[in-house]
Length: 409
Ligand SMILES: Cc1ncc(COP(=O)(O)O)c(C=O)c1O
Image 1: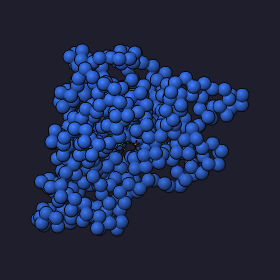
Image 2: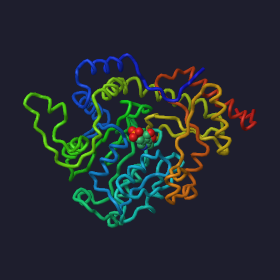
Image 3: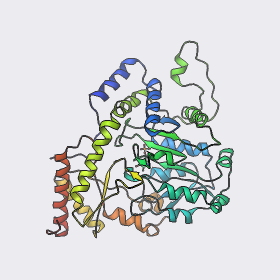
Image 4: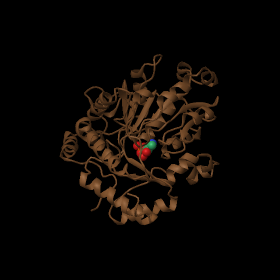
């Protein structure tokens, strides 16, 4: 059996929506992006959504709006994809890394220690689709001492009076926190619609605005729209309408708008998300959970608690008492049987760019412990129960062969 890691869902509905878009005569930003934004707003219950061409570009735009620059610090987990920290560097600021908890998400106690008068924003990651401990993070941000520490340098920063809480929700479209979509816990949640994500537009991202009273989300959305298209007051679609050619450039915006041809994929997938695609992910993740929970060596990821439910983006399994080399051998062994697994993530301090700028993995022991024992199992709607069972039996056989532990199950 051959099991790829994360093939995109390209079904008849996607093909039809893309073909219809091609035939419509309009392929860049226009009515389909607008429709996708309104569908995403409905799913996330966020007051405003803006589609862009990646999580990375969307996060850059948010930091630009928030006024992050040289001399500023932004707190990120050490255990994430590089983009979370790269957007901070692109803004000219310094990423301050903190360790994660056993559930892979930012450790609030480390966050408290990392806050300084230079901290302008916090970017916690809903790793694997599992929401961070937003209650603890929000409580810290509301502490009088922490608010006093904050040094606002723009009108928006003055209005909020504390660091911006921008969720890296790249993995967590569909995750819940209490009775609400998890994105509502942040001031701004940025989602990824990259090819391997729960909903994809090939490349894409969504900026979800949820700013508190004092801000008008619709006004900030308009700013984001204009500044995702060169600071231009009208997009190409609007300019094409009869007698409407005149436009102005009002700020030095980025050029990161999403085209309609990409939005078409997302629309066709999103129509099936609540009823079919997300339940399929849930079924697969829980099937892994139920089959692996009897093995003491299998440390299972959190999927649901009294507070949260995952978006089931991936299944990050950790292997108890394994070395990094042993973990790699298990990955090779399952690969030989046709099963593609992955590792999420190599902690940032282990990557050349960050290592050479002074970050040390020894400062992030939980991140290293998670990384060195982690194997990501595939989760996507096309996986059948038989394929999930094959992944599990292949993994168990590989574990036994590598550790010599035939009696473990
Ligand atoms: C946690 C996390 N943040 C950000 C990104 C960047 O997303 P994009 O590729 O849409 O820029 C990714 C992509 O894999 C990610 O996993």
